[in-house]
Length: 197
Image 1 (cartoon, one colour):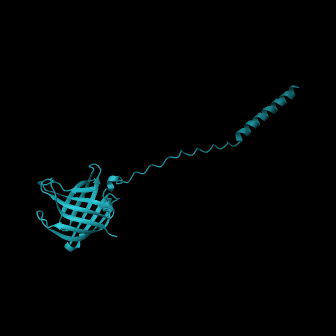
Image 2 (tube, helix red, strand yellow; image 1 turned 180 degrees about the horizontal axis):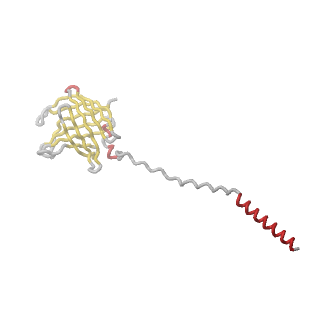
Image 3 (cartoon, one colour; image 1 turned 90 degrees about the vertical axis):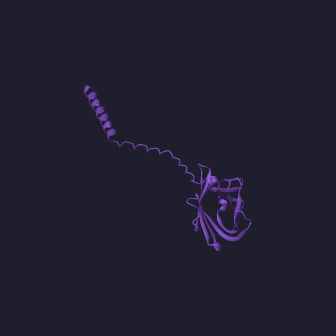
């Protein structure tokens, strides 16, 4: 009887050992795949540097124009000469600069300007150069449907350009002079713009 119990006990131990060995030799279950990373929203692109509405205040000027103009002979005389010309206006440098190319063939007069809006000063700035060695720096604003750009006052003298009567295909431009610091103005040059079709 004791022999039988001993045999049974050894058999159980052998089976238990075999089970443990089998458990150790079984391949481990593969780990679960990692969870996909949470979706990261794409960054919002920054707006273009000159996208604000103020940067578009001179957009009415963009295009190709035929010009008819009258120039005063002298500041103190109501005598005028008539002429014609052309002007081509474009936006360049990521739409931040308004570039002008003016030509009056009859008088062999050509000029160019660059205009930009300064958001810190809330002012338009224009620099003009021409083939008569002219150089002008002007600043101004667009208010009540009129764009006015003026030169600095020097010894009470200043000049200004005024864009007015603005329509989709036409507007008027006046070049005015003051000798009293801007209290009174005399028109020296009047140009009518008609969009070239």
